[in-house]
Length: 163
Image 1: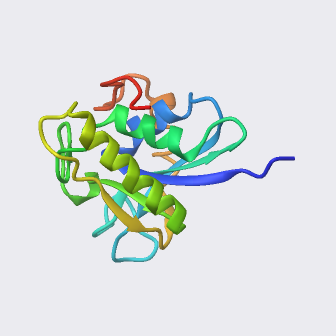
Image 2: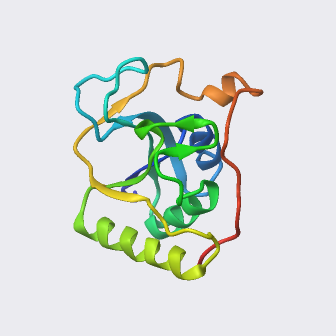
Protein backbone atom coordinates (compact mmCIF):
# COMPACT_ATOMS: atom_id res chain seq x y z
CA UNK A 1 0.00 0.00 0.00
CA UNK A 2 1.29 3.46 -0.96
CA UNK A 3 2.28 5.71 1.91
CA UNK A 4 0.51 9.07 2.06
CA UNK A 5 2.25 12.43 2.37
CA UNK A 6 1.26 15.72 3.96
CA UNK A 7 1.33 19.33 2.74
CA UNK A 8 0.50 22.41 4.82
CA UNK A 9 -0.51 25.70 3.21
CA UNK A 10 -1.95 28.99 4.43
CA UNK A 11 -3.71 31.38 2.09
CA UNK A 12 -6.46 33.22 3.91
CA UNK A 13 -9.44 31.81 5.75
CA UNK A 14 -8.96 28.08 6.09
CA UNK A 15 -12.63 27.26 5.36
CA UNK A 16 -12.47 28.13 1.66
CA UNK A 17 -9.13 26.43 1.10
CA UNK A 18 -10.41 23.24 2.69
CA UNK A 19 -13.55 23.20 0.57
CA UNK A 20 -11.59 23.47 -2.69
CA UNK A 21 -8.76 21.09 -1.77
CA UNK A 22 -11.06 18.36 -0.48
CA UNK A 23 -12.37 17.74 -4.00
CA UNK A 24 -8.91 17.36 -5.60
CA UNK A 25 -7.97 13.95 -6.98
CA UNK A 26 -5.46 12.29 -4.70
CA UNK A 27 -6.43 14.28 -1.61
CA UNK A 28 -7.25 11.74 1.09
CA UNK A 29 -8.08 14.04 3.99
CA UNK A 30 -8.06 17.72 4.95
CA UNK A 31 -7.90 19.36 8.35
CA UNK A 32 -7.87 23.06 9.19
CA UNK A 33 -5.77 24.52 11.97
CA UNK A 34 -3.08 26.91 13.09
CA UNK A 35 0.67 26.96 12.58
CA UNK A 36 3.64 29.30 12.55
CA UNK A 37 2.77 31.24 15.68
CA UNK A 38 3.76 31.96 19.21
CA UNK A 39 1.56 29.89 21.52
CA UNK A 40 0.90 26.22 22.09
CA UNK A 41 -2.67 24.94 21.76
CA UNK A 42 -3.94 28.02 19.87
CA UNK A 43 -7.66 28.65 19.53
CA UNK A 44 -9.69 30.70 17.09
CA UNK A 45 -9.83 33.47 19.71
CA UNK A 46 -6.14 33.19 20.71
CA UNK A 47 -3.62 32.32 17.99
CA UNK A 48 -0.99 35.10 17.97
CA UNK A 49 1.31 34.84 14.98
CA UNK A 50 -0.33 31.66 13.74
CA UNK A 51 -1.70 31.41 10.23
CA UNK A 52 -5.02 29.80 9.50
CA UNK A 53 -3.75 26.80 7.56
CA UNK A 54 -4.82 23.55 6.00
CA UNK A 55 -3.18 20.16 6.42
CA UNK A 56 -3.62 18.05 3.31
CA UNK A 57 -2.99 14.31 3.39
CA UNK A 58 -2.50 13.09 -0.14
CA UNK A 59 -1.62 9.99 -2.12
CA UNK A 60 1.59 10.72 -4.08
CA UNK A 61 0.68 8.04 -6.64
CA UNK A 62 -2.37 10.18 -7.59
CA UNK A 63 -1.10 13.74 -7.15
CA UNK A 64 2.21 15.40 -6.45
CA UNK A 65 3.35 18.15 -4.11
CA UNK A 66 3.97 20.25 -7.23
CA UNK A 67 0.38 19.74 -8.39
CA UNK A 68 -0.89 20.77 -4.94
CA UNK A 69 1.30 23.89 -5.12
CA UNK A 70 -0.16 24.63 -8.55
CA UNK A 71 -3.70 24.42 -7.19
CA UNK A 72 -2.78 26.51 -4.13
CA UNK A 73 -1.59 29.34 -6.37
CA UNK A 74 -4.76 29.13 -8.49
CA UNK A 75 -7.16 29.57 -5.56
CA UNK A 76 -5.90 32.67 -3.74
CA UNK A 77 -4.10 35.93 -4.39
CA UNK A 78 -0.47 35.31 -3.40
CA UNK A 79 0.44 38.98 -3.92
CA UNK A 80 -1.50 40.52 -1.03
CA UNK A 81 0.46 40.62 2.22
CA UNK A 82 -1.51 39.42 5.26
CA UNK A 83 -4.81 39.59 3.42
CA UNK A 84 -7.33 37.58 1.43
CA UNK A 85 -10.64 39.19 0.54
CA UNK A 86 -12.16 40.83 3.62
CA UNK A 87 -9.82 38.96 5.97
CA UNK A 88 -6.87 41.06 7.13
CA UNK A 89 -3.99 40.23 9.47
CA UNK A 90 -1.08 37.80 9.77
CA UNK A 91 -3.58 34.96 10.36
CA UNK A 92 -4.51 35.31 6.69
CA UNK A 93 -1.01 35.43 5.21
CA UNK A 94 -0.01 33.38 2.20
CA UNK A 95 2.54 30.84 3.37
CA UNK A 96 3.87 27.40 2.60
CA UNK A 97 4.97 25.44 5.64
CA UNK A 98 7.65 23.01 4.52
CA UNK A 99 8.73 19.87 6.36
CA UNK A 100 11.78 19.06 4.22
CA UNK A 101 14.39 20.90 2.17
CA UNK A 102 12.92 19.20 -0.89
CA UNK A 103 9.51 20.80 -0.19
CA UNK A 104 11.16 24.17 0.45
CA UNK A 105 13.07 24.04 -2.83
CA UNK A 106 10.04 22.90 -4.80
CA UNK A 107 7.92 25.68 -3.24
CA UNK A 108 10.56 28.32 -4.07
CA UNK A 109 10.73 27.06 -7.66
CA UNK A 110 6.96 27.33 -7.88
CA UNK A 111 6.96 30.88 -6.52
CA UNK A 112 9.51 31.75 -9.19
CA UNK A 113 7.25 30.14 -11.81
CA UNK A 114 4.23 32.14 -10.64
CA UNK A 115 6.22 35.37 -10.71
CA UNK A 116 7.56 34.58 -14.19
CA UNK A 117 3.99 33.97 -15.45
CA UNK A 118 3.15 37.67 -14.98
CA UNK A 119 -0.47 36.73 -14.24
CA UNK A 120 -0.42 39.02 -11.21
CA UNK A 121 0.42 42.73 -11.43
CA UNK A 122 2.53 42.50 -8.25
CA UNK A 123 5.15 39.98 -7.07
CA UNK A 124 4.29 36.98 -4.92
CA UNK A 125 4.60 37.63 -1.16
CA UNK A 126 3.99 34.02 -0.12
CA UNK A 127 6.43 33.12 2.63
CA UNK A 128 8.25 29.84 3.10
CA UNK A 129 8.25 28.85 6.74
CA UNK A 130 9.62 25.73 8.38
CA UNK A 131 6.84 23.60 9.80
CA UNK A 132 7.14 23.40 13.55
CA UNK A 133 3.77 22.17 14.76
CA UNK A 134 0.30 22.09 13.26
CA UNK A 135 -2.54 22.50 15.76
CA UNK A 136 -5.98 21.34 14.57
CA UNK A 137 -8.71 23.97 14.83
CA UNK A 138 -11.83 23.47 16.89
CA UNK A 139 -14.40 20.99 15.54
CA UNK A 140 -16.76 23.84 14.62
CA UNK A 141 -14.19 24.97 12.02
CA UNK A 142 -13.57 21.53 10.50
CA UNK A 143 -15.63 20.96 7.33
CA UNK A 144 -17.18 24.37 7.96
CA UNK A 145 -18.56 24.97 4.47
CA UNK A 146 -19.97 21.45 4.38
CA UNK A 147 -21.89 22.27 7.56
CA UNK A 148 -22.68 25.86 6.41
CA UNK A 149 -23.00 25.77 2.61
CA UNK A 150 -23.76 29.49 2.41
CA UNK A 151 -20.86 30.47 4.67
CA UNK A 152 -18.22 33.04 3.77
CA UNK A 153 -15.32 32.21 1.50
CA UNK A 154 -12.99 34.38 -0.57
CA UNK A 155 -11.44 31.42 -2.40
CA UNK A 156 -12.13 30.54 -6.00
CA UNK A 157 -10.18 29.35 -9.00
CA UNK A 158 -8.66 32.53 -10.45
CA UNK A 159 -6.40 31.10 -13.14
CA UNK A 160 -5.77 27.81 -14.86
CA UNK A 161 -2.74 25.69 -14.17
CA UNK A 162 0.73 27.22 -14.10
CA UNK A 163 2.19 23.90 -15.29
